[in-house]
Length: 292
Image (cartoon, rainbow, N blue to C red; front, side, top):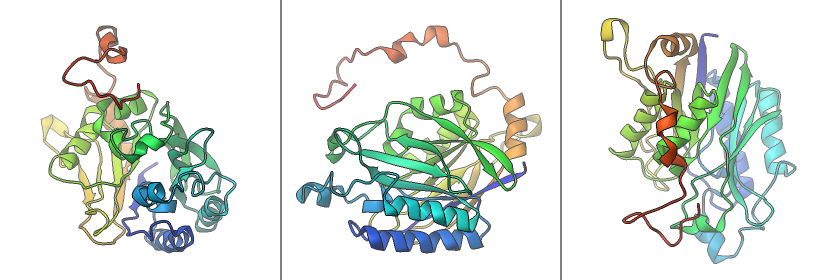
């Protein structure tokens, strides 16, 4: 396999108008396919435009949640088949008790190969109404150029090093990240660090202005070349307005890099990390609304 082209669908949504979001999402997927994308990545919770305030005011959390049998979802399965392109669709997912903030990877044949629910829900905000996910699955995505191992994390997940680390340990080569918040001079380097420390490619799609500030971005995970030469890991970074930048990952080069370099899982000392799974929390980090 040589390259994986990921289209970052940086858009403004129509809020709770799911039909309008469907039409616009399909339009942007078609434009991505014209750019020879292998994968089209949506921003977070696209079916309702991440309109959590409106969902809460109108008590629509359950009514607006969908599952994989819903026409919104099956439409993008059909679109993926037609375009011969994988689609990472994001949605408020119907669940047993309370909905989940989810993303599903639909392959180019229209099959769902992975569904991920956001583990680090923002419990200090309206996402306290949601059911958190509890694992980080990885799946092999078969593209026209060959297979690549894909994982997903969503927005606030990327602010915890454990998210990308577990995905790497589960075998991910590329981590796809739907987003719905401001991306700034702190969060973007933080995202770059996730790529650097795990030797994985990372790609993130955000909402365009004025809903958020765009800046959708991708890093290839390769920090050094021959004889320690410093490499620029940035593949692409959008502006604030609507656009579809394409992140071109050189998968073979990434695989060679991971075989020879020192990060990732090469020299970790897991036996000394037991505190990482401790449930104990001490000041100043105690929060009454935190769910462990």
